[in-house]
Image 1 (cartoon, each protein chain N blue to C red):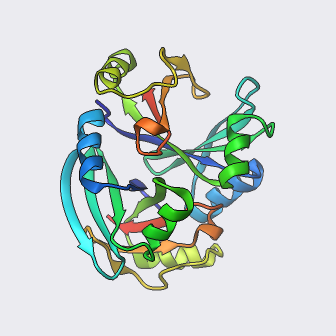
Image 2 (tube, rainbow over the protein chains, first blue to last red; image 1 turned 120 degrees about the vertical axis):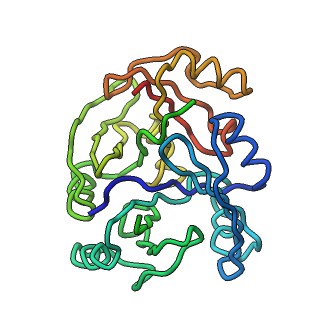
Length: 132
Length: 132
């Protein structure tokens, strides 16, 4: 079971501008920035107090974040919960009847083991589990 | 400046069913439930580990959550950041050029002083400040 919210994912149009804005408006601190060619996105992890925000911009219109932006525009994209043991958490998720996007954990941009749960299993909320 | 993420707000179609689902899928615990006639919503505050999720269902189609549901369907609705002093936080938000929905703090369903920042000031993210 989750230990709490690990981070919130936000889709943005312009990553540099959004980093500046979160820094200016909320005192956020940039802690990591990375490109994923396979997912077609560039992401920045920012610390706000004790928590994290992941800002994501699409590198291609046909990437998952690109399609999200085309359909919904910029805004809240996903919520990630921290778990101690992601293999156990995925087994519990399966037992609870959740549909998993990632049947096995994979390595996220933050270097941690992650897996996504399908939004249709979570009332429209794209939900990530992160081994924290 | 925020001390971290205070909670995530999620718009849901059926509050009772969603509470059961979050309990079953994520081990969430119901801590508070309240109706706001003025906002046309019923909300449930759930604890997940060290954090909170606010599930919200519309009481009327023309309420803010009702309109959100009609436009976007169920899903992530807002993010709330905890602040120590909401009067100071609102002054800082104004100084940073943010457009406030609530010019002065008001009392939220959780009994705390809250204020909302307009999503157009936060890249499409409806953002709440909570005096925690």
